[in-house]
Length: 457
Ligand SMILES: [Zn+2]
Image 1 (cartoon, rainbow, N blue to C red):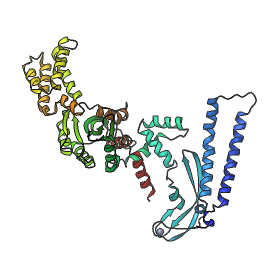
Image 2: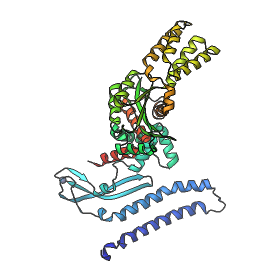
Image 3: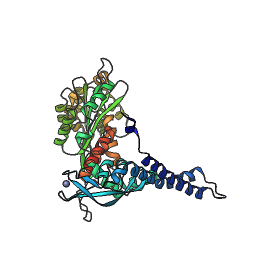
Image 4: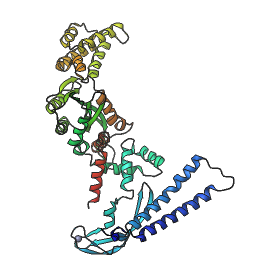
């Protein structure tokens, strides 16, 4: 390769240097005016505030200068090929694009082309730079959506301005969130096969096989029917978000594999779980299935993970026992504690028949107690094959779904159950999808898909 090929055009870099120096001078002038005043002794906080106020204008201008020099050729382009038919089109006009990036505001004056055959207007520069049609560019959109996934839109917009010195309205935050959320579909929110295999490999140690835990649960989300902006809102109701969390119990640590929660029926839950199961190589793993007593949940978990060891969630089980104890023996009684402890100990050793026998012989304190005793007998009978906590412990299986409880709390409750928030099912599911993506480490992918969809005409 000859020397000539390596020459950088001194023209554009020289010009760029000049433009930046000009901006620095303007900024320095401003700072001098503000700070070097007799009697003024600004503190660290005041100086930092001054930087915060001035850097956007400064960096925004530098940003603009950089684009103008780096892409000078595209900005001066007189003819461009139509992206749809390839015909060469002549420049129609210069068009202004106002942009806001995380660096501040900039304005681009770029040529605009129009293909008469295709009735299609375009700017080649926008394509190269991946400029968003919105004023706030993708870098802002990505952070704003990430923020909205954590806190309500109005709080999010305030926090965003507070922490970044960039103002975005709660409407912008909401609308962008919904557009990104459309891309939070199961296939992309769940890590791909390769990534899951990598996570499994990471916890393996020699011949010891890690346990893959599949924990399912439902959580109630407040929902309302969709209404147009000026229409009266319909009556709200609580709907179940059904979900699962899959994680690996390694020797020393827990490694998250995938979470997925949606407001949906049992059938869709089953389909989704089956899809995720197909991405996991089950041969080399031990599998533990955790759930409460709900039959629908076991049906699907067993179908998707036929090898799995079924474990009735210890905490759910204990909850039922406490309930009976309270009604039968009264809140503060000694007998109550004694009975709870001995019952749980028996269940720990898988003596379910023994416990049921005792319950059947119990003389109910009243009709409420009688009803709960009857329910507990049915519950234990229904789940007898899933109660073997001592064996689970020895085998290294989990006995309680602390994992799903905390995932549920993280994914559903913290964002979905804010006071006064009632979700339209679609938006609620987008929120759940984006939150799962963040938890699963796939948010970048979701956003990339959104960006691609925005770019195509
Ligand atoms: Zn064309």
